[in-house]
Each structure stands twice: as C-alpha cells, then as structure tokens.
Length: 165
Image 1 (cartoon, rainbow, N blue to C red):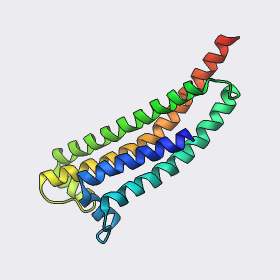
Image 2 (image 1 turned 90 degrees about the vertical axis):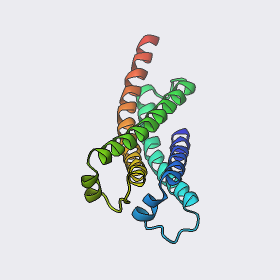
Image 3 (image 1 turned 135 degrees about the vertical axis):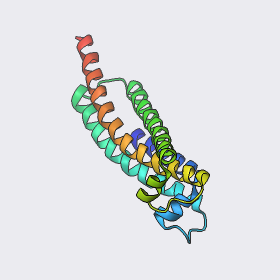
C-alpha cells in the first residue's frame, strides 16, 4: 500500500506544481480549454497516473520482497527503501524539467518545432518546457528507479540474509 500511496501523492503534488507553473501546458497538451479549475484537474490527473504507476510498482516490488527474503526483512527498512525510491523519482522530475529548459534555451526554434503548442516568449516557453520535461522525467525516471531500486533492494536483502547465517 505504501508504494501505491506514495506514488499517488508524488503524482498529485508534482502535477499541482506543474499546473501552477504552466497552465498553458495542460490547455495545449490535454486540451483542457473548457476545464473550470485547471489546477485541481491537473492534481487529479497526477493522482490518477501516480496511483496507476504505483500499483504496478507495488506488484513488482512486493513480488521481489517476498521472493528475495520470504518477507522476513524488517518492514521499517522496506519503507525507508520505498521512500528513498520516491525521493529519487522526485529528483528525476527536477532533472527532467531542467533538461527541457536547457534544450529550449539552447535552441528555441528546434524546441518549438519539435514539441506541440509551445507558447511564444522565452518565459512562457521555459515554464512550458519545465512542465513537459518534468513529466517525462518522473514518468520514465520512475520506471528506471523502480527497476534499479528493486534490483538493489533484492541484492541488499540477500546480503542481509547472508549476514544472518
């Protein structure tokens, strides 16, 4: 449950922040021209996507947890591991946003031609780039964190079991 709840919370918070930074992104990409409360809708969308990704992560992580140590590892250690993976995902959200801003600053023409609905003006373009890049960062970064974090968790739990013998 902690995987699912944490992922949902991260999705909610990051989308709320993104909606405040660039509502134009959600209007252009999600076609939310008629949405009354864009920020609330973006938060709900982030919660929904976070819960979905968290559900998948929970299934994978739980299977690895049960198989690798017969569910004998201290639950507080497991929760710390999950929180660390959540923090890593938030870090990749930030990195994705920064990379997108750098790309748009490096070549605004390329950025505008490559991505949909990029607004005119550097400030609006940078905000738009942040939102798009941060979403890609947390989406794909979250998958990478899940894979690497789960493998590292498995290795750590095997080492812990080996030290107990």
